Image 1 (cartoon, helix red, strand yellow):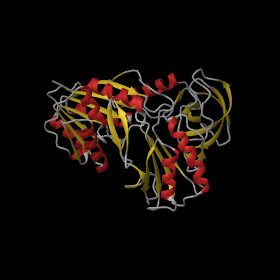
Image 2: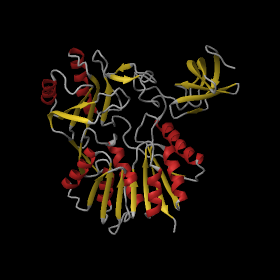
Image 3: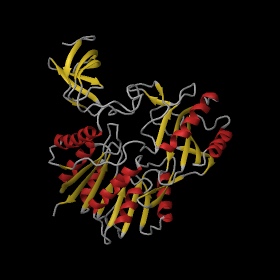
Length: 433
């Protein structure tokens, strides 16, 4: 049995979805932060659990061909990225295998396509950072609430950096005791920026002056908002927002359509890859002008309206549980001249869709509720396009749909979040004839 502080020489045979190198010694699994498939390493055991050990790299004896020098100098401490030390090509290979393995685990023979991607750096249109009691902004260290100060994140949209740097300096001079997070959002197609202060109180001293200063210093900042979140949980945003300066929303251009975005609305973080994702979804959905298209978990209406703009449907129905997002979706349909759309505020699993010919779902990480899968099985739309940020719940739900007489078609992984462990996947389910 291995013990803490043991020194070993190991060969790394794999990387898991948390970015940890995987090795084995005397029958025990050893996880190594920073280890890469093909490495031979000298490591020191720093933790011993019942089923595994965790080790730290002391020396790289043989360096893997998949290894590269991280571009970010805080990579080894920050908990945001896990694949900054491997080549982009190998990252795509790992994400392909992860999707493939989840379908294998559910005993589904899946036709998984090679991973597709677009922008791999500077792609995140949203920056969400905790703030400590000294006004320092950064990211949490891996498996910790220690804040790692950052100057610049290579994954963030470039136009967010000047605003972020300004806030770093300003907030350390004028500390806001109730401030918990800074949340920046950018419309890549419009250039508009939103600044959101997440606070444990409904107001803070100097809020109007700071908001007006942001608007005057940065012409791209069109909205400054205070979000009130009194709850001490890992959920960043509360349900209550108040505009301090500028507009209540910003807008973006996606697939040629204009979308207004509320602070609480879900909006994909990688603009270019989202366009690729939605074009792929439209190709798989094959909507005709005689079809009713249902977009469940529709958010502000982006998926359904983008597909509808590429292959127009007779009718578009959108369903979303967040009231502000539904209001956004209705307004987005109006400003884009979409006259065949109806949006409803309700849980997706409570929706009745007797006339749906094609269904698109983009659920949260936990996947679709079993009652929704049952309902889709009962109404039997001819095609269902499932967009997922979690390969395991996607494979689970596809297995359930197969039980209702659906066949699994194309499975297309999309590297929506380069550098991180996450992968977006689109799956086509077709009703068996």
